[in-house]
Length: 433
Image 1 (cartoon, helix red, strand yellow):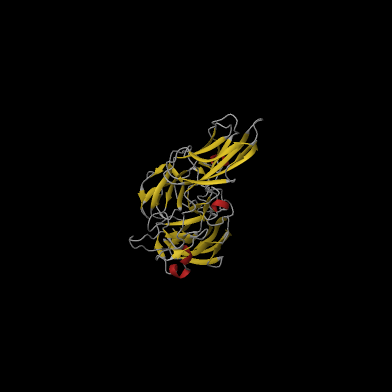
Image 2 (cartoon, rainbow, N blue to C red):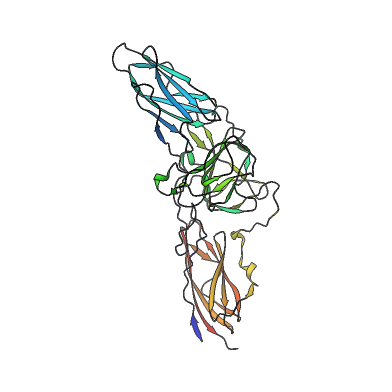
């Protein structure tokens, strides 16, 4: 008897694209999607304490920013000029960078652009004044300022520090976009890392620190630009002044509160898909403030399996190995070989059919062929491949005993492949008893 298995197009939905879960198309879609941790400079109108001054624009740098934490306003003085005043309602220092435009009949008593560090709880701190240059005529100016968290003069990042991978000890996740990622990791986000985490995955602190900001009320997310600035996040300041940024948490996904001290490895929240994101993931970076009121992500080392310092690579899988955690067996798809499965044989239930299945380990697919007949079969197996390579030459002929499953091949994702697809084509004949 000669038969043929119906060709199977594998619908593999457990693979992440460069920013997360696939759509369930045939194979696996690995195209990089826009799951940027947006560094949107949100522009808001600051309070206007005088009708003469122009509109003030505020830019909170680096993370999404919360309304009213830092405010710069102008107030008219007795001589017909203005004083610029600032409030810092944050629990940590901030740096404010002020620029003016369209200055008319006024001069400043400080060089521009103006930069100042405001201590936490500062209220109505005078930054500088503008004095009239003429007794007549209209006076005015345009005010724009931006602010960043921390004091750039005091930040001294420990570049040798080994950050914990921000998920549970003994679990493994893929870096879906790494440093200098071609889609969104440039500029302030140059040294950010995106991890493929399902919604609700526990997030662990990568380093000891103080929780300085939390947002968890956002309920929306998606790839469209309109979702920029809508992500939930936790921001932790480390003892050297740098800030660990954990973004795209689920709604209600924070496990910490502002002002709380956390230890490395401690639960701080749960991953999600809020803000501008094409799928569930965690954005993590370490950033520092700069004198011009911006935040800049910086390169960081992470703790490897054996405590060694490692730099994460895009598309690679990594286990979190936290100090004091229980021992575990690390298994990577890249380490699997044909020899490991050469003696594999498993019993299967009678089915009067031939079936094909795979097991996935890190974008490495171990393929098996099962014979559900009461007689042995001789099967000729071909494979249509896209974005993957087979460790066994195809087509191949294999004899499978009755009610038995045997190892067929290992399929590996090709470097840089944007889509993975494998379609087995099997012809077989039943052998005489």
